[in-house]
Image (tube, rainbow, N blue to C red):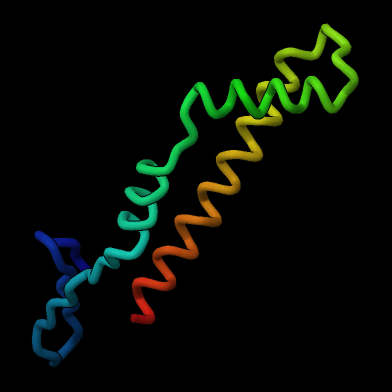
Length: 92
């Protein structure tokens, strides 16, 4: 088996040469592009982190934890929304 160009050439004893083309899927890059367009802004993260701070009883000292939790929650929500949007677009 030899790799050549955009495909692979298979050669066997007494067999003809065949080129297999690698097929790429456009689904994954589309999902990544959709997610990139819905990434939460710093302001959205800041507001969610403040809500978490308030929910914790306004106790200082956990600013980084609040920020990371807010960022994770918002990114997960954006990803779920992006996946839901791409599934809806494919079914229509």
